[in-house]
Length: 267
Image 1 (cartoon, rainbow, N blue to C red):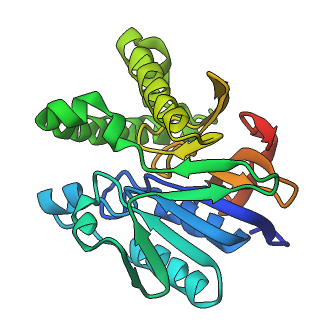
Image 2 (image 1 turned 180 degrees about the vertical axis):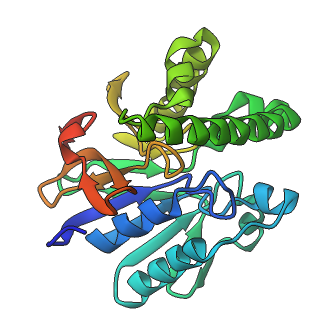
């Protein structure tokens, strides 16, 4: 554990997938314990209802994450839950507030500098999901199987003294179609942002953390808490950056990899 708690103006997390074996609940719980914010945005796929429908999986660590989020909301952190495709059943109840948590489809976030960001999960801009949902669900099963194989592989690597290696991240960067999908997705959400007259977009969905400028729009994707364990944070001076959070399970100590920020930007 770290000795001090970090304070941010805003924290954005998505794609936690509670209820799925892919979820890194222990890492997220550690992150939530060591990072506070005025506003906490939960940008979709926090609960994986697709996985729960296939088979029930809900260990104590997943319950601990929910309790921690509810406790933050109860103690004054404005907590906004934006629905995603894996928790799309919640959309039938929007808008609603439960346990001091606001449930919405989207929200506008205004930075210290007055810039307006559209905050959405992003599944509406996933062509595969919208036009062939069965392919998306099949891909979800394949992704979870890939993560299972990767966990076993990295258990062996750790015993041999090697660092963690992500097979899914490698494939995303090397497979041409995956790279094109990410590019198409980011351009689609940026176009929508521009159409609405926004300065930027903050989203999730594709498990690929990034901050960049696309067509004069600030594109922010907070990644996921399955494998990369990344979050987007806004400092009190307006700086946006991506943090990667890991727990070294062998030593049971937290490693704050803030030095591995993918990109920083002040808006």
